[in-house]
Image 1: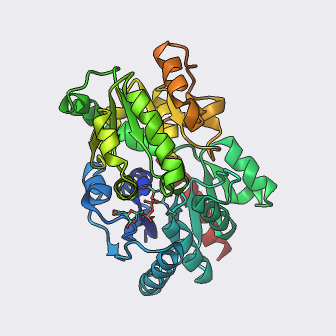
Image 2: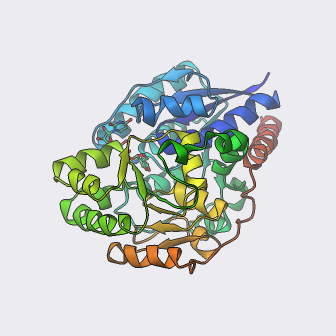
Length: 369
Ligand code: UD1
């Protein structure tokens, strides 16, 4: 009998991590994957469009939790997922990334003695003001198996006392999605849809509460983006959180007047087409720091720290203070931005390593029983 695996998909950055694993588990014949969508992200272009782009089927379970405060989101996911996990108890529960649904489902699994696997374990920003850092710490403590993307992840977990036999370095699964869809991404030619030539424009994404929730932080960023837009065309797919704040603070019109192309969030394939053809990315996202390192595109990260230091050590990512954004843009345009290399195991074969590790661990468990 194939072992059943619940894959928790919740928010936009989860979908490109779940998709390659889903496809690899299904193809293996040894596992039956079931997708549980918590509904943390619910807009069509934050969620459904990604399922279509990534070739994911309709979720087996939809928890429809929606938005809310952190406690409401975590609590509602726990209540809803516990019912599913009790009615259809899986052999393995895989949670990915660092969103509220990740920690909520890990907690449910741990309390029901369902073995929990954390995909993208061990990342640390060491900034507990970030909700994601709390989610990462708590999830890694609860998980039975920790799949890490890079050596810093292994070290962080070892320093926190996690036994080595629970940790497997599998690499960066998000890049499997890129490789699975590379041809179709290349065929998208998304820049042309916005009237842009490859290599001539920048792409902007912003959604961290620390950047967008207060006018005192968002306004100076808008001022810098106005100046940067005078140097090269900027396309800005706006996250719902950011859209609301830009309107609340009266900043939306300023970006429009400065000539930025403000658009709805873009689904996976056109987004990666935009990124892979960009001159540079300006972002506070986690995933884009990794995708740009993989694609050797300059990444200007508007944060004080990153849980993905390997993208700076080996890749094209640099942390940029808001007041120095334009200077950093000039550095890129002047051809002075350092290029990088792909970290080990960022090779599009991570899902296969996950399947092999799960097979090995399933055999160990069966032998122990
Ligand atoms: C969440 C994750 C973050 C991830 C980000 C990617 C947590 C703590 N944060 O942050 O790690 O990088 O997703 O997008 O889990 N909204 C919509 N439509 C949607 C989804 C959200 O309108 O489809 C609105 C919500 O109602 C809320 C705001 O956007 O007002 C923020 O959504 P939320 O899921 O709370 O957090 P994100 O900022 O998206």
